[in-house]
Length: 161
Image (cartoon, rainbow, N blue to C red; front, top):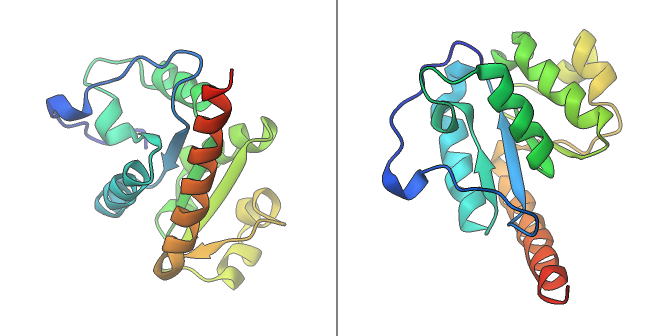
């Protein structure tokens, strides 16, 4: 999120160049308050075989924040939005959801500390996330299984090209 303090990236997490045919990328949208949880989700997503974009890791001090966000939104095939009480009030979360919605890319909402009823009564969430099958954080493994299938399918298509 805007204003989040980036931290130095370990060499194993350096920015890969993303060319056509690269691995599926998941953009993780979150409130800076939820950074630790977002980082844990990123670890699991990478274990499933996808690349991730997480602002706290992938945006360095001095980078043009909006430019890096826009490039990641264009590159990533899907959005995982971590929906927490804090994220629900962050404008950048809704900007990111709007981009993915407008681009007709897959959006997965992960509920952590909020309920489907909270989503239904929130002005932006009720409009932008309607018709989405949201997943509770305690059931996120089901998302990871589905993600692994998408990663494998994309890799299979890439090897036949």
